Image (cartoon, rainbow, N blue to C red; front, side, top):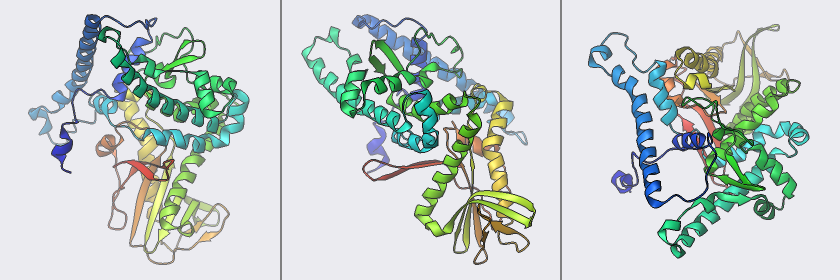
Length: 427
């Protein structure tokens, strides 16, 4: 297979998830009419929508055109893509950080330690929520095919694929063998609240309720979902905000969040290098009472080592709007600080003046001189345009022993059929 064999599948006009979410968010600002428009009206809607989306894209490309002014880019020290206005475009149009099955199947791991809170306050466990979300996806796959086939029986003026996006509580309950009352609680947790008009969504990167609550209730116990990806991402992201709103529990929730990233990273590395070569929560001491460094996950393999530092920080809404200071502050807290910590610890490995100890105060010996130490910065949340921002902002003190960081934002999961899948954002 060659590139030209696939090229016909690519189109610059293909909508991406963020564009569709924007359209759904605008839809929610008004009462929704579910009647099928006349063909000429539908055509006008489509043409106007495409024109507006193109206008949005062109408006965000403006700073890029200005940045690529030949008179400016030749200036010494010119960095045209580091300002917030230029970063809005890659942040909005950049690729996703994970496949939908990863968000779905990693959610029980991410919130498993918060299950008691979820059961008490939401009425369901995270595994139950995952199973229901999975069922919604499978049901919509079957309904979409059936809906398309059914169009052949109807005249063109009655064609609509909307029924392929609809489902009921009872349908999900029957498919999952989960009590319908529990199914309803899960679906309600991810549904647009009654009367909500998304009024805060006035600028492209404002909070869009369609992302946090992707289900739309159309009648009692019946829902519409336009994007399954939005639902699985909300399953992965929203419970953090639920538990975070409980002031008495938020500190516990934050600790669980950090543990998820560290434990999952250690587990993945152990599958590659062997459990006996992977160590978690390593402290570096200069003396018995003086701790000078901390490594979240350390791999010792022959004359090589990996120093992994995990962070739980995401790109804020203010940064997505193009706020220069906020973009840099978010990057520093989520990536740069992690990288700096990794390189500082990497330089101490193998130095006889320092001692490594695990969480149980057991000393970790380095069996041989290290030829290279690789720094890996891991985050567990979607960070738009991370690779692009890393090229613009990331600073590191690379040497022959500690080369540049090779991966940022690693997410790895296993499919239901046992095949491994992963996505990375390269630094």
